[in-house]
Length: 362
Ligand SMILES: *Cc1c(COP(=O)(O)O)cnc(C)c1O
Image (cartoon, rainbow, N blue to C red; front, side):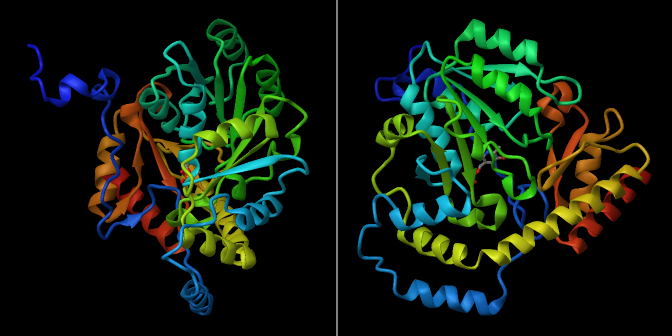
């Protein structure tokens, strides 16, 4: 059937029509352990000081287009090496989109291991690029031979490596990452969204490789609502990427709030430490449950395998008991039978563990 003259089917790119929109479930009153958020808010006196700061923000004016003050503070806090440049985004998702737009073309390839963060694929598809997924090993480590031969064959414009990886939680072998950076003909973006929860990072390696960029976000460290990400790397690349940025992408409230947060960063760092130590407790508790197999995690979530064929039932049983986590079984492959839980407050982790025990009994 030919589409009508003024129909969306006539005009919307086929690649877009073929997509399904990114679905975020409504948590309602559920204990929310599905989205890698920091569960802690600021102490009341800090909230008061923050609100005082916001009183002086001029909502009638456009933001500082380069967010210079904030950029400088973020560079210092995230230990961006001297001489490297940064571009800020409305969340690191926007920076992934800017990267894709900067290299887009129907013959261009974005390559990532699989499974990984789903936005790499979604953004590649929206921007009209090809997407190449390279299966990880059974233990979710990088398969060096598969990566190097896929890079050789597809000559990707960008390789994305989430480090630690989402949804698996592990760090890739740094030596293999280096081999990938050396072999890649284009950019390699090491996405360090979970930097607050691990000691590993490629930030200090910027400049050592001409094609390495590092991506960070403030989302997982406790400021997901602000939408703020940072891309760091050599000026030759970032100057080009920056041309795809809309002029005022970091709004005045985000600029003021993030600056305030960086002046009180000890609070966020204490929260991250708490989450790291609760992650160990949660992993140990999961390890002790019959039929549950948790994977090692350097992030603020834990991926775990349920008894074969049981993931949907366990997920629903948790939800019925008021706990929302992430069901990954429909992704298939190595994620079949897998669920992912975000590390919450101790009481939330306890509620999750009790609900899981009940689910496994029934
Ligand atoms: C959550 C996540 C992001 C998204 O971060 P935002 O800054 O909130 O857009 C990016 N990369 C990975 C690997 C993530 O898990």
